[in-house]
View 1 (cartoon, rainbow, N blue to C red):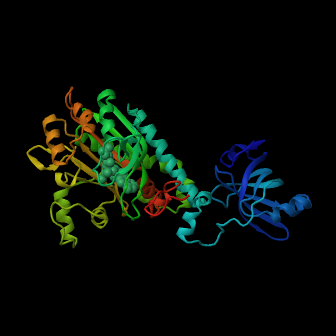
View 2: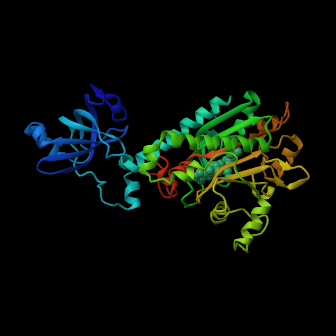
View 3: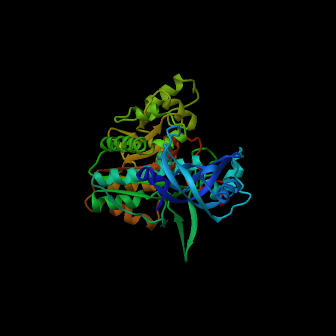
Length: 430
Ligand code: 4AD
Ligand code: MG
């Protein structure tokens, strides 16, 4: 019977066939240990010379890395491995021989591995990170569906900028100029007025000349938007969502977290509510921590975020930033218009900002004022203003960066390992 590595627990003491690749091998005169992978998982196959024909044993001994095979054998328990099962191999049929596979078990440099990303994805660690990414996506759909949200897909080709005009990817749209979306938010606001609670999940693009371990040119964002929801209420949704995602990964990705040697106690601690610190207090805290140069009104960089986060063992909301350094659509704090109803959620352990969110301006006159201040005068913004004209309501939303969240939960240093084919400042290949 044909099965997969992920299903072998259902076939204990049965003989099955699995389509697999050979990821590694050790052999002696009497026995060969085959490290098998089939996409669903990794498992050891044992070929004992005295139990199989001479032909099968010679095939096993001659297998080269990444050769594809159909391997047949009995599934038995293996208490020494984390996986818990192995195969007593009785037959091997070679599908396609692989020669000179470039990624060998020895250490390789990062640029070499990135050049071979199409193959590197097969390795155990990369496989684990992608499975965790998949679990975060699955948990996201579950969370928002369970809580009455409608998934809405905003366009990727747009005629206006959502997050400032300096980081836009320009493209031709027949005779017009168009941009690749930096954020679906403006469209999600329209959707929230039509469906109440909505969320999107899609690729976004930032032509940022940043070469840090937190920046991608193309990244995926989850953007919920909620009508009749205040900033404070939005923070509760965010902490519940992030806690839910972390718990789902803990529950369903135990093998993957183990492969990545993730410190589970750090993740088990991630439960709502999360601490909040105002921008004002964050400035004071930073000064105390030796950032004597920082002045009220300046934006935080990665070292600032890390210094603030290290005082907390959960993600921390930094709230009420100066209006000056935030996007045009954020609602001012009543009686203190120099700061806005917004928060960035900073992950622990130095992973930086994973969420940016805010309550949106719902007053048409104020919105028009902000537009002028930001030089957003073109007709392409007309539709967005009309949302404030026909039954405007308080509403809030946020954007969670998927790759930074995967990096944090997986415990990998750089976002380039958290997306299948990263687009970086110096990389469009493969
Ligand atoms: O803070 P940002 O720019 O917020 C927005 O785009 C809002 N319109 C979202 C909303 O309210 N609907 O981006 C949101 C998140 C960041 O917190 C970060 O996690 C991620 O997107 N992000 C990036 N991730 C990887 N590479 C980049 N260059 C990123 N820029 C932002
Ligand atoms: Mg931000």
